[in-house]
Amino acid sequence: MNATNILNDILQKLSVLTKEDEVSQELSVNEVQEETIEAVSEATEEVKENAAELSDVEATTKVEAEEEYEAEEGKSLNEGYVSDERYAADMEALKAEISAIKSMVQVEMSSMEKEKQTLSEQVKELSKEAAAEPIKHNPEAKTEKKMNFSYGQNKPLSTLDRVMAKISNK
Image (cartoon, rainbow, N blue to C red; front, side):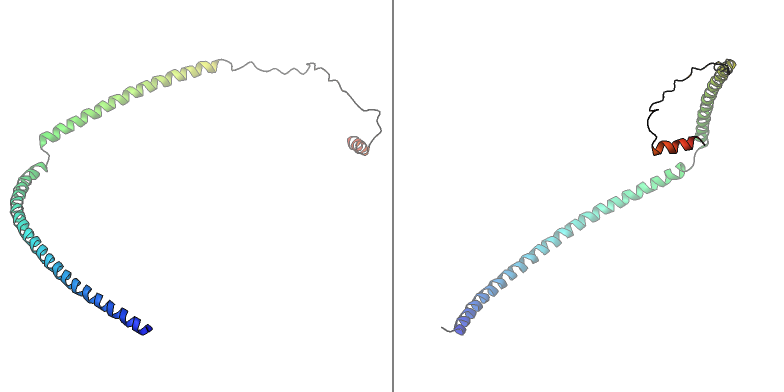
């Protein structure tokens, strides 16, 4: 067999297989299209039913919301302003709190003043006493003489010794 003959046989077999695949795919595409059409129609029916239910619910909620809004409008106009009695009561409460705070501050200030006075008295008492005994200078005080030890008196002089001797004997 020739190479071209082999290739032709392979191509014929492949073309038969692809034709069978195409036919089976056409059948499956038709089935899928039918199933999607059925699913879409079912979904539209459900949406229509839900829309009808929602429109009923929305109508009732709108009516309830309007009633609540009207009730709140009446309340909000009255609640927007403070009555004279409530204002007077709040002001009295604030004045009472302020006076209580003032009395607490006065008590603290008086205790601080007392502490300040006691501390100033203590300072005065301590300043009267001498801090320490005064130091007296005595120029005639005798000090012991230090012993001077000299080592290496008989050694021969080195260069360093000669230089140091000339520096110290200036």
